[in-house]
Amino acid sequence: MRLLHCSDFHGNRRWFDWLAQNAASYDLVCLAGDHLDLLEVRRLDPQIRMIKAVLQGIVTPLAICSGNHDSFSGPPAPPSLHQAAWLRELRRPGVWIDGDVFETGGQRFRCIGWNAPLPPASADEIWLYHAPPARSPAAAGLDDSDAGDELLGERCQAGAGPVMVLSGHQHDPRQWACRVGRTWCLNPGYSHRASVPNHIVIDTLARTAMRRIDDRDHAATHLA
Image 1: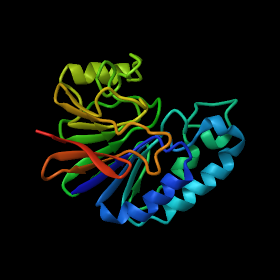
Image 2: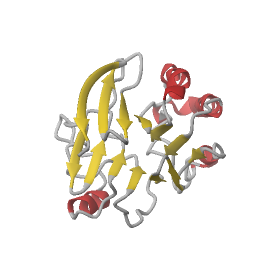
Image 3: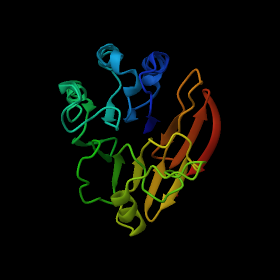
């Protein structure tokens, strides 16, 4: 099964158009949060309308989790952002959102929303979760920042994480792919000026992952 893993589109229309044009090449598209750009707060409603229209037009199965730009727990955020309410409206057969657990191609997946409680991890699950494990190279930035999730980091370091976490959040990860305990952590990163989003192509049968930048192969790893 071929997976396309993207994150941190931040309302970039060109990147969503690229996704619509390329999604059919994959068996499952995984979008790991920060679909909106909250810095453009006056344009939230147009962003939401655009994103929903694009994603509703994609026939390839979609797995989507919310990020910190997509979800708030309450006021003063608008109702559409409360627990990523706008994102839940996209749920339909073949489209899985925050809280959903599903199986396709013989692989089990779980979509976990921003600030949602982390469930116990199964060794055979792939998680979509916006923040990478804390203290992992996928969460550490080139400026020594750490954008990781503490509980997920503890789980993975104890060997109790899922088989794979597809994340984003850290825009400049020290490593786009790393292993923590039994868990592979993948983060495509974010290139603001790129014409297409950074993305990772995963082959679950061959157990390979390829990071692509500017739509060109950049680095590969074997998910042994």
